[in-house]
Image 1: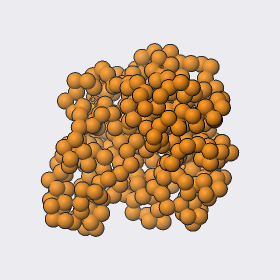
Image 2: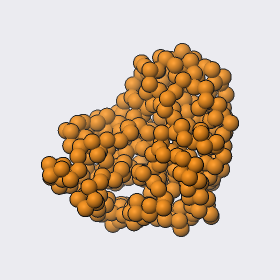
Image 3: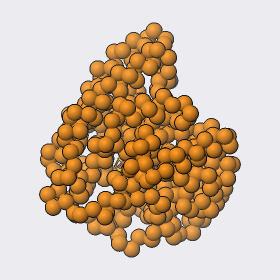
Image 4: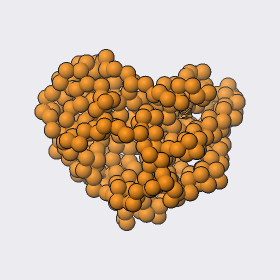
Length: 375
Ligand code: SF4
Ligand code: SF4
Protein backbone atom coordinates (compact mmCIF):
# COMPACT_ATOMS: atom_id res chain seq x y z
CA UNK A 1 0.00 0.00 0.00
CA UNK A 2 1.08 3.60 -0.60
CA UNK A 3 0.87 6.18 2.17
CA UNK A 4 1.34 9.93 2.00
CA UNK A 5 2.68 10.94 5.37
CA UNK A 6 1.71 14.49 6.27
CA UNK A 7 4.43 15.92 8.48
CA UNK A 8 3.27 19.50 8.74
CA UNK A 9 0.81 22.00 7.35
CA UNK A 10 3.58 24.61 7.34
CA UNK A 11 5.04 25.83 4.04
CA UNK A 12 7.87 28.17 3.11
CA UNK A 13 6.21 29.37 -0.08
CA UNK A 14 2.92 31.05 -0.90
CA UNK A 15 2.32 29.96 -4.48
CA UNK A 16 -0.11 31.87 -6.65
CA UNK A 17 -2.38 28.83 -7.28
CA UNK A 18 -2.14 27.44 -3.75
CA UNK A 19 -1.91 29.35 -0.46
CA UNK A 20 -2.05 32.77 -2.12
CA UNK A 21 -5.66 32.02 -3.13
CA UNK A 22 -6.67 32.21 0.52
CA UNK A 23 -5.80 35.92 0.44
CA UNK A 24 -7.93 36.68 -2.61
CA UNK A 25 -11.42 38.13 -2.37
CA UNK A 26 -14.12 35.52 -2.50
CA UNK A 27 -15.55 35.01 -5.97
CA UNK A 28 -19.25 35.81 -5.51
CA UNK A 29 -20.11 34.47 -8.96
CA UNK A 30 -18.08 31.30 -8.54
CA UNK A 31 -19.64 27.91 -7.83
CA UNK A 32 -20.47 27.02 -4.24
CA UNK A 33 -18.50 23.97 -3.22
CA UNK A 34 -20.52 21.24 -1.53
CA UNK A 35 -20.21 21.89 2.22
CA UNK A 36 -18.07 19.28 3.92
CA UNK A 37 -17.44 19.06 7.64
CA UNK A 38 -13.76 19.82 8.37
CA UNK A 39 -11.94 18.99 11.59
CA UNK A 40 -10.84 22.46 12.65
CA UNK A 41 -8.70 21.08 15.46
CA UNK A 42 -6.37 18.97 13.34
CA UNK A 43 -2.81 19.41 14.62
CA UNK A 44 -0.64 21.52 12.28
CA UNK A 45 2.32 19.16 12.88
CA UNK A 46 2.69 15.42 13.28
CA UNK A 47 1.40 14.89 16.79
CA UNK A 48 1.50 11.13 17.44
CA UNK A 49 4.28 8.86 18.66
CA UNK A 50 6.20 7.62 15.56
CA UNK A 51 6.28 4.15 17.19
CA UNK A 52 2.54 4.00 16.53
CA UNK A 53 3.25 4.67 12.86
CA UNK A 54 5.94 1.97 12.73
CA UNK A 55 3.61 -0.62 14.24
CA UNK A 56 0.96 0.28 11.66
CA UNK A 57 3.41 0.11 8.74
CA UNK A 58 4.87 -3.16 10.00
CA UNK A 59 1.48 -4.78 9.40
CA UNK A 60 1.82 -4.00 5.67
CA UNK A 61 4.08 -6.44 3.76
CA UNK A 62 5.23 -3.78 1.32
CA UNK A 63 4.51 -0.21 2.38
CA UNK A 64 5.68 2.82 0.44
CA UNK A 65 5.81 6.10 2.33
CA UNK A 66 5.76 9.50 0.60
CA UNK A 67 6.67 12.48 2.77
CA UNK A 68 4.21 15.29 2.21
CA UNK A 69 3.16 18.62 3.72
CA UNK A 70 2.81 21.61 3.63
CA UNK A 71 6.47 21.43 2.84
CA UNK A 72 7.85 18.23 4.36
CA UNK A 73 11.46 19.44 4.26
CA UNK A 74 10.61 21.98 6.95
CA UNK A 75 10.83 18.94 9.26
CA UNK A 76 14.20 17.39 8.20
CA UNK A 77 14.95 15.84 11.60
CA UNK A 78 11.65 13.99 11.58
CA UNK A 79 12.25 12.77 8.01
CA UNK A 80 15.69 11.45 8.95
CA UNK A 81 14.29 9.72 12.01
CA UNK A 82 11.46 8.03 10.10
CA UNK A 83 13.74 6.96 7.23
CA UNK A 84 16.18 5.40 9.69
CA UNK A 85 13.59 3.77 11.97
CA UNK A 86 10.44 2.86 10.03
CA UNK A 87 10.02 -0.71 8.73
CA UNK A 88 9.77 0.56 5.16
CA UNK A 89 11.86 -0.24 2.11
CA UNK A 90 10.60 2.49 -0.18
CA UNK A 91 10.38 6.18 0.56
CA UNK A 92 9.42 9.05 -1.71
CA UNK A 93 9.00 12.77 -1.14
CA UNK A 94 6.95 15.53 -2.71
CA UNK A 95 8.67 18.85 -2.16
CA UNK A 96 9.11 22.38 -3.46
CA UNK A 97 12.85 21.58 -3.52
CA UNK A 98 14.06 24.68 -1.68
CA UNK A 99 15.41 22.72 1.28
CA UNK A 100 16.59 19.55 -0.45
CA UNK A 101 20.13 20.48 0.61
CA UNK A 102 19.13 20.18 4.27
CA UNK A 103 19.03 16.37 4.23
CA UNK A 104 22.10 14.19 4.50
CA UNK A 105 22.93 12.54 1.15
CA UNK A 106 22.43 9.04 2.58
CA UNK A 107 18.84 10.01 3.44
CA UNK A 108 18.17 11.64 0.05
CA UNK A 109 19.59 8.57 -1.66
CA UNK A 110 17.02 6.40 0.12
CA UNK A 111 14.18 8.04 -1.85
CA UNK A 112 13.13 5.98 -4.84
CA UNK A 113 11.28 9.02 -6.20
CA UNK A 114 11.52 12.75 -5.57
CA UNK A 115 8.78 14.99 -6.93
CA UNK A 116 9.93 18.59 -7.26
CA UNK A 117 7.40 21.32 -7.96
CA UNK A 118 8.29 23.60 -10.89
CA UNK A 119 6.10 25.23 -13.49
CA UNK A 120 8.23 24.97 -16.63
CA UNK A 121 10.51 27.87 -17.52
CA UNK A 122 12.25 29.96 -14.87
CA UNK A 123 10.17 33.10 -15.50
CA UNK A 124 6.83 31.38 -15.02
CA UNK A 125 8.03 29.32 -12.06
CA UNK A 126 9.24 32.46 -10.30
CA UNK A 127 6.06 34.36 -11.14
CA UNK A 128 3.99 31.60 -9.58
CA UNK A 129 6.24 30.50 -6.75
CA UNK A 130 8.46 33.48 -5.87
CA UNK A 131 11.53 35.31 -7.17
CA UNK A 132 14.64 33.15 -7.36
CA UNK A 133 12.82 29.88 -6.64
CA UNK A 134 13.67 28.17 -9.93
CA UNK A 135 17.37 28.83 -9.60
CA UNK A 136 17.54 27.76 -5.94
CA UNK A 137 15.66 24.55 -6.69
CA UNK A 138 17.89 23.74 -9.65
CA UNK A 139 20.98 24.32 -7.51
CA UNK A 140 19.63 21.74 -5.07
CA UNK A 141 18.71 19.31 -7.83
CA UNK A 142 22.26 19.49 -9.19
CA UNK A 143 23.60 19.00 -5.66
CA UNK A 144 21.63 15.83 -4.95
CA UNK A 145 22.67 14.41 -8.32
CA UNK A 146 26.31 15.26 -7.53
CA UNK A 147 25.87 13.62 -4.12
CA UNK A 148 24.84 10.37 -5.75
CA UNK A 149 21.06 10.49 -6.07
CA UNK A 150 20.17 8.04 -8.86
CA UNK A 151 16.43 7.65 -8.29
CA UNK A 152 13.48 9.01 -10.20
CA UNK A 153 13.29 12.79 -10.28
CA UNK A 154 9.92 14.12 -11.36
CA UNK A 155 9.30 17.73 -12.35
CA UNK A 156 5.76 18.34 -11.19
CA UNK A 157 4.04 21.34 -12.70
CA UNK A 158 0.81 23.07 -11.82
CA UNK A 159 -0.60 24.41 -15.06
CA UNK A 160 -2.86 27.42 -15.40
CA UNK A 161 -3.87 29.94 -18.02
CA UNK A 162 -0.29 31.23 -17.85
CA UNK A 163 1.06 27.91 -19.09
CA UNK A 164 1.86 26.93 -22.64
CA UNK A 165 1.79 23.19 -21.96
CA UNK A 166 3.66 22.24 -25.14
CA UNK A 167 6.47 24.66 -24.42
CA UNK A 168 6.69 23.92 -20.67
CA UNK A 169 6.99 20.15 -21.03
CA UNK A 170 9.40 20.32 -23.95
CA UNK A 171 11.54 22.87 -22.10
CA UNK A 172 11.99 20.63 -19.05
CA UNK A 173 12.39 17.49 -21.13
CA UNK A 174 14.95 18.86 -23.56
CA UNK A 175 17.31 20.43 -21.04
CA UNK A 176 19.39 17.50 -19.82
CA UNK A 177 21.12 19.84 -17.37
CA UNK A 178 17.93 19.66 -15.30
CA UNK A 179 18.26 15.86 -15.15
CA UNK A 180 14.56 15.18 -14.63
CA UNK A 181 13.71 11.60 -15.46
CA UNK A 182 9.98 12.25 -15.55
CA UNK A 183 7.42 15.02 -15.93
CA UNK A 184 3.94 15.35 -14.53
CA UNK A 185 1.46 18.22 -14.58
CA UNK A 186 -1.82 19.01 -12.91
CA UNK A 187 -4.31 21.71 -13.87
CA UNK A 188 -5.37 24.29 -11.35
CA UNK A 189 -9.07 23.48 -11.74
CA UNK A 190 -10.37 24.32 -8.31
CA UNK A 191 -12.78 27.08 -9.25
CA UNK A 192 -14.56 27.89 -6.02
CA UNK A 193 -12.62 31.07 -5.37
CA UNK A 194 -11.78 32.42 -8.76
CA UNK A 195 -13.75 31.09 -11.74
CA UNK A 196 -15.30 34.39 -12.85
CA UNK A 197 -11.89 36.08 -12.75
CA UNK A 198 -10.27 33.47 -14.94
CA UNK A 199 -10.11 32.84 -18.66
CA UNK A 200 -10.01 29.11 -18.17
CA UNK A 201 -12.49 28.23 -20.96
CA UNK A 202 -10.57 30.22 -23.54
CA UNK A 203 -7.24 28.77 -22.43
CA UNK A 204 -8.50 25.18 -22.47
CA UNK A 205 -9.96 25.54 -25.94
CA UNK A 206 -7.27 27.62 -27.59
CA UNK A 207 -4.10 26.56 -25.81
CA UNK A 208 -4.22 23.56 -23.47
CA UNK A 209 -6.20 21.03 -25.52
CA UNK A 210 -4.36 21.72 -28.80
CA UNK A 211 -1.09 21.72 -26.79
CA UNK A 212 -1.85 18.24 -25.47
CA UNK A 213 -2.53 16.98 -28.98
CA UNK A 214 0.76 18.41 -30.22
CA UNK A 215 2.59 17.05 -27.20
CA UNK A 216 1.29 13.51 -27.76
CA UNK A 217 2.54 13.72 -31.34
CA UNK A 218 5.93 14.96 -30.11
CA UNK A 219 6.00 12.14 -27.53
CA UNK A 220 5.50 9.50 -30.23
CA UNK A 221 7.92 11.28 -32.61
CA UNK A 222 10.55 10.94 -29.88
CA UNK A 223 9.85 7.19 -29.62
CA UNK A 224 10.25 6.88 -33.37
CA UNK A 225 13.42 8.94 -33.62
CA UNK A 226 15.22 7.81 -30.44
CA UNK A 227 13.66 4.47 -29.48
CA UNK A 228 12.81 5.88 -26.04
CA UNK A 229 9.51 6.39 -24.23
CA UNK A 230 9.60 9.62 -22.26
CA UNK A 231 8.11 9.23 -18.82
CA UNK A 232 5.45 11.91 -19.04
CA UNK A 233 2.95 10.60 -16.54
CA UNK A 234 -0.33 11.89 -18.02
CA UNK A 235 0.60 9.98 -21.20
CA UNK A 236 2.57 6.92 -20.14
CA UNK A 237 0.14 5.59 -17.54
CA UNK A 238 -3.02 5.64 -19.67
CA UNK A 239 -1.10 4.60 -22.80
CA UNK A 240 0.24 1.54 -21.02
CA UNK A 241 -3.32 0.62 -20.08
CA UNK A 242 -4.52 1.16 -23.64
CA UNK A 243 -1.75 -1.11 -24.92
CA UNK A 244 -2.67 -3.86 -22.46
CA UNK A 245 -6.42 -3.24 -22.89
CA UNK A 246 -6.80 -2.54 -19.17
CA UNK A 247 -9.47 -0.46 -17.46
CA UNK A 248 -8.36 1.81 -14.67
CA UNK A 249 -9.75 2.71 -11.28
CA UNK A 250 -8.99 6.21 -9.98
CA UNK A 251 -5.50 6.73 -11.34
CA UNK A 252 -4.03 8.65 -8.41
CA UNK A 253 -4.89 5.68 -6.20
CA UNK A 254 -6.79 7.75 -3.62
CA UNK A 255 -9.11 5.61 -1.55
CA UNK A 256 -8.03 2.25 -2.99
CA UNK A 257 -4.23 2.02 -3.26
CA UNK A 258 -2.99 5.29 -1.84
CA UNK A 259 -4.01 6.77 1.50
CA UNK A 260 -2.80 9.75 3.52
CA UNK A 261 -1.88 9.69 7.18
CA UNK A 262 -2.96 12.95 8.78
CA UNK A 263 -0.93 14.73 11.47
CA UNK A 264 -3.12 13.16 14.17
CA UNK A 265 -2.79 9.61 12.80
CA UNK A 266 -6.15 9.44 11.05
CA UNK A 267 -6.09 7.91 7.59
CA UNK A 268 -7.73 9.86 4.77
CA UNK A 269 -8.19 8.69 1.19
CA UNK A 270 -5.97 11.46 -0.16
CA UNK A 271 -3.57 14.11 1.13
CA UNK A 272 -5.83 16.96 0.06
CA UNK A 273 -8.76 15.65 2.11
CA UNK A 274 -7.27 17.11 5.28
CA UNK A 275 -9.77 17.10 8.14
CA UNK A 276 -12.60 15.58 6.05
CA UNK A 277 -13.46 13.17 8.85
CA UNK A 278 -16.56 11.81 7.16
CA UNK A 279 -14.28 10.16 4.60
CA UNK A 280 -11.56 8.90 6.92
CA UNK A 281 -10.60 5.24 6.59
CA UNK A 282 -9.52 4.67 10.20
CA UNK A 283 -6.60 5.52 12.46
CA UNK A 284 -3.08 4.10 12.51
CA UNK A 285 -3.63 2.99 16.11
CA UNK A 286 -5.98 0.20 15.11
CA UNK A 287 -6.46 0.04 11.33
CA UNK A 288 -5.19 -2.87 9.27
CA UNK A 289 -3.22 -1.40 6.35
CA UNK A 290 -4.12 -4.41 4.24
CA UNK A 291 -7.87 -3.99 4.59
CA UNK A 292 -8.55 -0.28 4.62
CA UNK A 293 -12.04 0.58 3.41
CA UNK A 294 -12.24 1.60 -0.23
CA UNK A 295 -13.70 5.03 -0.87
CA UNK A 296 -15.09 5.08 -4.40
CA UNK A 297 -15.63 8.00 -6.76
CA UNK A 298 -19.36 8.56 -7.15
CA UNK A 299 -21.66 11.03 -8.86
CA UNK A 300 -21.54 11.64 -12.58
CA UNK A 301 -18.33 9.66 -12.96
CA UNK A 302 -20.21 6.40 -12.32
CA UNK A 303 -22.06 6.71 -15.62
CA UNK A 304 -19.45 8.55 -17.67
CA UNK A 305 -18.64 6.94 -21.03
CA UNK A 306 -14.88 7.38 -20.49
CA UNK A 307 -14.83 6.34 -16.84
CA UNK A 308 -12.65 3.30 -17.47
CA UNK A 309 -10.04 5.52 -19.13
CA UNK A 310 -10.28 8.46 -16.72
CA UNK A 311 -10.84 6.50 -13.54
CA UNK A 312 -12.83 9.42 -12.14
CA UNK A 313 -9.96 11.94 -12.24
CA UNK A 314 -10.16 13.18 -8.62
CA UNK A 315 -12.00 11.80 -5.60
CA UNK A 316 -11.69 15.08 -3.73
CA UNK A 317 -13.27 17.06 -6.58
CA UNK A 318 -16.04 14.52 -7.01
CA UNK A 319 -16.99 15.13 -3.37
CA UNK A 320 -16.47 18.88 -3.10
CA UNK A 321 -17.57 19.69 -6.68
CA UNK A 322 -15.70 22.95 -7.10
CA UNK A 323 -17.25 23.46 -10.53
CA UNK A 324 -20.49 24.68 -12.04
CA UNK A 325 -21.84 22.47 -14.87
CA UNK A 326 -19.97 24.47 -17.51
CA UNK A 327 -16.73 24.25 -15.55
CA UNK A 328 -17.19 20.53 -15.10
CA UNK A 329 -17.75 20.11 -18.82
CA UNK A 330 -14.52 21.97 -19.54
CA UNK A 331 -12.48 19.87 -17.11
CA UNK A 332 -13.98 16.61 -18.34
CA UNK A 333 -13.45 17.86 -21.89
CA UNK A 334 -9.71 17.98 -21.23
CA UNK A 335 -9.85 14.32 -20.19
CA UNK A 336 -11.74 13.47 -23.36
CA UNK A 337 -9.17 15.37 -25.42
CA UNK A 338 -6.34 13.51 -23.70
CA UNK A 339 -8.04 10.19 -24.37
CA UNK A 340 -8.74 11.02 -28.02
CA UNK A 341 -5.15 12.19 -28.54
CA UNK A 342 -3.73 8.98 -27.05
CA UNK A 343 -6.21 6.78 -28.92
CA UNK A 344 -5.26 8.48 -32.19
CA UNK A 345 -1.58 7.83 -31.40
CA UNK A 346 -2.17 4.19 -30.44
CA UNK A 347 -1.71 2.67 -33.93
CA UNK A 348 1.64 4.46 -34.31
CA UNK A 349 2.77 3.27 -30.89
CA UNK A 350 1.70 -0.31 -31.66
CA UNK A 351 3.60 -0.17 -34.96
CA UNK A 352 6.74 0.98 -33.15
CA UNK A 353 6.39 -1.93 -30.71
CA UNK A 354 5.77 -4.41 -33.53
CA UNK A 355 8.87 -3.17 -35.35
CA UNK A 356 10.99 -3.53 -32.20
CA UNK A 357 11.83 0.19 -32.08
CA UNK A 358 10.36 0.31 -28.56
CA UNK A 359 8.88 -2.39 -26.34
CA UNK A 360 5.98 -2.74 -23.94
CA UNK A 361 8.24 -2.77 -20.85
CA UNK A 362 9.37 0.73 -21.88
CA UNK A 363 6.00 1.91 -20.57
CA UNK A 364 6.54 0.43 -17.10
CA UNK A 365 6.52 3.06 -14.37
CA UNK A 366 5.86 3.55 -10.70
CA UNK A 367 2.14 3.71 -9.95
CA UNK A 368 0.72 5.84 -7.14
CA UNK A 369 3.88 7.87 -6.62
CA UNK A 370 2.03 11.14 -6.14
CA UNK A 371 1.35 11.75 -9.83
CA UNK A 372 -2.40 12.10 -10.19
CA UNK A 373 -2.02 11.01 -13.85
CA UNK A 374 -5.17 12.66 -15.21
CA UNK A 375 -4.27 16.36 -15.12
S1 SF4 B 1 -14.28 12.53 -17.57
FE1 SF4 B 1 -15.26 13.64 -15.88
S2 SF4 B 1 -17.22 12.57 -15.50
FE2 SF4 B 1 -15.92 11.24 -16.75
S3 SF4 B 1 -14.94 9.88 -15.28
FE3 SF4 B 1 -13.54 11.61 -15.67
S4 SF4 B 1 -14.00 13.14 -14.09
FE4 SF4 B 1 -15.70 11.65 -14.13
S1 SF4 C 1 -6.30 13.69 -7.81
FE1 SF4 C 1 -7.79 14.34 -6.26
S2 SF4 C 1 -8.23 12.50 -5.07
FE2 SF4 C 1 -6.34 12.12 -6.20
S3 SF4 C 1 -4.69 12.72 -4.79
FE3 SF4 C 1 -5.15 14.54 -6.05
S4 SF4 C 1 -6.69 15.70 -4.87
FE4 SF4 C 1 -6.62 13.62 -4.01
